[in-house]
Length: 145
Image (cartoon, rainbow, N blue to C red; front, top):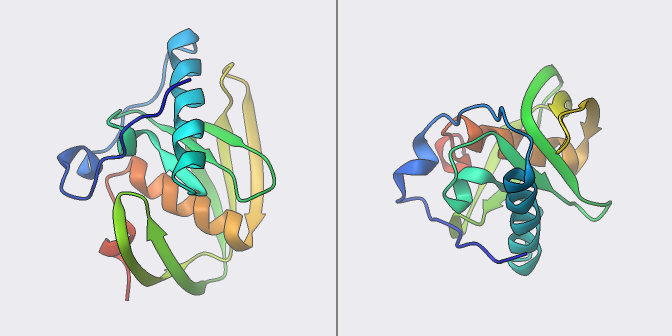
């Protein structure tokens, strides 16, 4: 595993829609491992591939309940709304109040290409939405109040 550099808001890769992952190979596994290590070292709770310079649909999240690896994630259901403070490793030292769905269901693939679904509330729901936004070229500062 290796630490990756986290790009900041000035980098144009953060504004691009990421392409789907089609190959579930060793290279993808290395990226997932590196992203997790980078997230933990930076004391983050989530990291999307474009934040480490890769324009593909890959996310890692750990809110303290174990590592989640999501490939080609899609939000399939949203319920309710809530407002809370967000920050981002790619937008250091800036925070904002962001309205998000209170509950989300997300379909995704794991590192072996097996389909999964997760339903989340609270911090995990917020992280899922925040990281999936990265995959579509959106930053929390675009929607913060």
